Amino acid sequence: MSLSTQYSLSELAKLKIHFIGIGGSGMSGIARIMLAKGFTVSGSDKNDSPLLTSLKALGARIEVGHKEENLGDAQLVIISAAIREDNPELALAREKMIPVAARAQALAWLMSESTSIAVAGTHGKTTTTAMLAVALQAAGADPSFAVGGTINTAGTNAHSGSGSIFIAEADESDGSFLAYKPSGAIITNVELDHVDHFADVEAVFRVFEQFISSIQANGFLVACGDDAGVKQLLTRITRKDLKILLYGKGENNDFQIQRIQLNPLSSLASISSTGRKVGELNLSVVGEHNLLNALAAFTAASALNMAEDKLFTGLKSFTGTRRRFELKGEVSGIKVIDDYGHHPTEIIATLTAAKNLAQSARVLVIFQPHRYSRTAAFFEQFSAALSNADFTFLLEVYAASEKAIPGVSSLMIARNMDQTKVRFEPSMLEVVSEITKMAKSGDVIITLGAGDISSLGEPILQSLASR
Image (tube, rainbow, N blue to C red):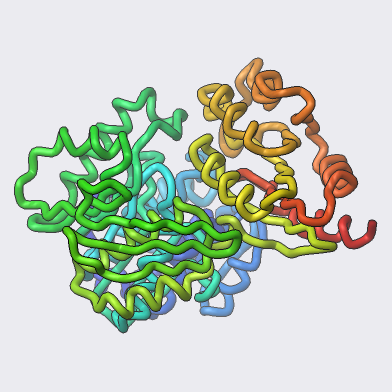
């Protein structure tokens, strides 16, 4: 049976489904929705985690570590992109000719019987998906959703709702989002990233073209009309059946934000639509980028004919997602924030919000580059982006699934920066010690990156408390 096999929800419900790599944010979300629907789910992951504990509590059979016997009597296997062909469970599934599907295909099956909205773009996908889910919940729609991060207010990254709408974060990193074939889509922005998969920006445009082509007939597309990449992408679209709604700050957009006010702990703006004043956007999250993310969610919800006043209420209640400008704690007036930013554009947005939060105090950064290929491609842009901080500690590159590239190191970034504002220090313990010695009341400490740097928040808080 090939990966292109289509399963209805009723067919999936009859199968014993095994996840290899079930602890990832995307995989665990799909498993959570399947469990809520009463499906039989098992799974394994190389490391234990709170996500695995929660899936066990929901009824999944979970194993830590990968070995053949974990497969059990599975009838369908779901794999994450990180799983290699020599994984013992996958190798046995191949030998037994058990159908094997990618994570995106499994999510596509779950979405197939709903009004589905796929949220794509190089940056802002997780937050925009989460904002749309929270806004639609406030409007009474109770959507199903699968997000690449835990929504603070919900305490989960996925939900099987009673409503007819399904919202999913659509990751372009390996092109797998082409499986979704949604009723409608959001594209927040388009630029080069994931250089391990895309040779150049033209390859990125091609896959986004294909994504737009995969939207169902007479569907809708919400896109940021201010973004240069989106503008270029739209010139390549020939479909006439799509309803295209643009959002942004510019007057050419169908939905526009004006009178922007960026406060240290909140963000405000007015929304208008083709000359009509729609209402006031009042967010509990910071940064102009989040106002645009909220506008994207509002525009998509409007396309679904949701009540505008309820959407404003929902968006105001949104307090963020884990690892997106997440306040880990505050000691002696020093705030410690963790952020997933791992691309120069994301870092600029994060540091702009951090400077606004710090006001006249300093922003101190610990950055862990993610993947050797990304570091090699963007080291100059990383240097420029990080120069917005008052001081940066650079950890060594987090490899993810990549092999080291000779000559590629965080030192490439450090060498292009003011040497009085940067220090390359591969030891996490040393970085925690040094940044806590340096920090003063009012300063903002940020841990930045998509690797294991998120583990530093608590040690930094403890170190600050023990000074």
